[in-house]
Amino acid sequence: MAIFQPPVVDLRGKRGLVVGIANEHSIAAGCARAFAAAGATLAATYLNAKSEPYVRQVTDQLECPLVLPCDVRQPGQVEVVFDKLRREWKNFDFLLHSIAFAPAQDLRGRVTDCSAEGFGVAMNVSCHSFIHMAHLAEPLMPRGGCLLGVTFYGSERVVANYNIMGPVKAALESSMRYVAAELGPKGIRAHTISPGPIRTRAASGISNFDALLDAAAARAPEHHLIEIGDVGNLAAFLVSDAAKRITGTVIPVDGGEHLLA
Image (cartoon, rainbow, N blue to C red; front, top):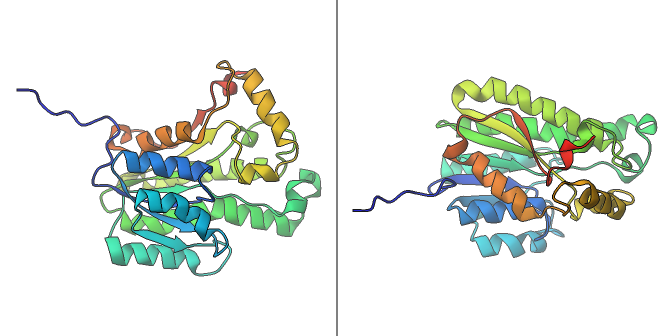
């Protein structure tokens, strides 16, 4: 008699929160699709009323039972989301944090000229919100779980026009490592995924982004750009039990571009 073997990436029975879907082309959307395809039940957030219809184009297809507003710049909104998860689900298994923001004048200017206010906003939205969500997720992951952030190689080397987001993403990566170490005894793992350049709404704020895309495709050993589904496949593996002994990593998915000096 043949014995049924579940797939390596099997998220049946798991529940996760996806933060950062902007539209159907965003990295978080690609991850949400991969989570759902592997059998997970998802909750998701949207930034505001203007963005909600674009988010629901994704979440409706995935039959997400919870779709909630969440602007991390607004006091109390993150807490409301996690309180809803506690009341509806009692606990959950994984979180994807895929949000980043810097005021335009600070993002497009030199790091040397970044204002204290702009730096604070960028750090709060792009980095501290991950720490805050880890804090709120901890009591809701009694069986362990996985926390994912999204970074970019501009955190470790200078990328033209990435500017203040480079230091901010470096802070996110370092924060992830400390979170992984602190929550590891409870079985909660943490990672940041580092995709190569992808044409998303968030990336549109970076000056000369088309040139960055062309350069990435030319440099990568595979000589083509990655897609949001590639990021989603990695994310689904990382939150699965197949990766339960892996934590504290920054994992590139960029066609090998990170190999080259």
